[in-house]
Image 1 (cartoon, helix red, strand yellow):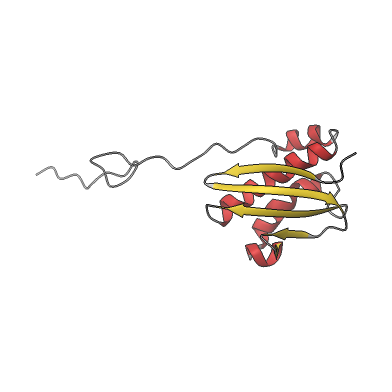
Image 2 (cartoon, one colour; image 1 turned 60 degrees about the vertical axis):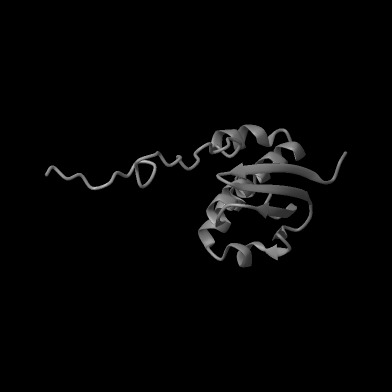
Length: 129
């Protein structure tokens, strides 16, 4: 049996490469601790949700590299990658992670700017006269 599992996650423009292995619960992102990397508790909790829902937050060491996007997109990409890696480590986790919605990629992306307008949906001020 393999002792290290790998998965990728994507959200918006962010791409996360996630490795998990049995350990004591260390969480490193780009060679930094998760709390120092994100800075916000909400993003850190968002990333650790797959571990918490499967009761394995102290059983695995997580190391990840994240590129692109902002912090919110990176946390979403990490959450998806972590959930995928957990299903590789134990296929029984798939049911609980799927029900929680952690194995579905969030396909929402930025809408493109249209010509003749200042943005995607915004319009210039209308003048009747």
